[in-house]
Image (cartoon, rainbow, N blue to C red):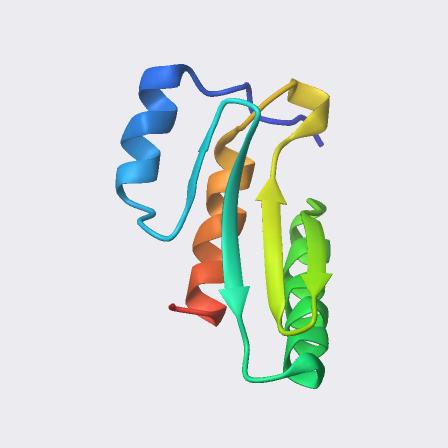
Length: 97
């Protein structure tokens, strides 16, 4: 499946204005999700994993006790693409903040 092209700085800035829980730049967009406890954080990784696998797109996940630090980037495109934005939207649907 062909991957979408890397977003321009202006396209990324416009997209991030619609994703207030995310920040970043052309190298990746980031969000942290805090859960009630460690088991909840592990379960959140699994939930995100199922969504990401359906999209054939996989985030960088750093689990620290009850907090997930997520980074989305399309490595094959060398930066952020629409695929990352769509995964961010789906993560936001799971964890509205």
